[in-house]
Image 1 (spheres, rainbow, N blue to C red):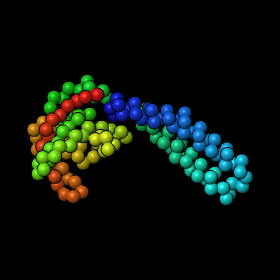
Image 2 (cartoon, rainbow, N blue to C red):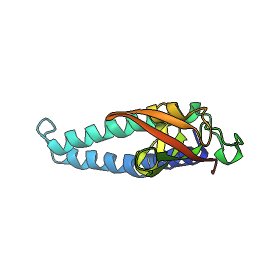
Image 3 (tube, rainbow, N blue to C red):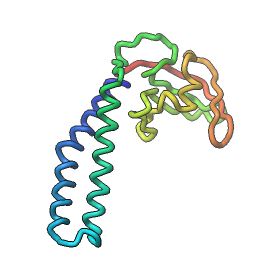
Length: 154
């Protein structure tokens, strides 16, 4: 996992523990005050939310305790694509460029251009070099890309 990803997950864990957990406990207490719990939708919704929050807390604590955090800015793999690399790809047909950073599974967020190391795109890129042509299996079929640049920025 990258340093940024670990920080983001720690911030989420902190928010869950210090804000969301107390809020859902308060919601359960208020719903209990309304009486009959069997037919109290607010109570059941709050309990379900509590289960989700507690599950996410356990997941994040487990992942963070077992994670190997890598400072991407200290990697020096040259123009070779490895974990943590920020890669600029050019579509062979359209020339359109896309930028992705290869990160751990938990920190992946395609909207931010962060793809999981286990994704098909990342697997196709790992071990390649700047200037190489790669074929990526996409849902719409195979796509050809050229690796325009590889960088390691924390």
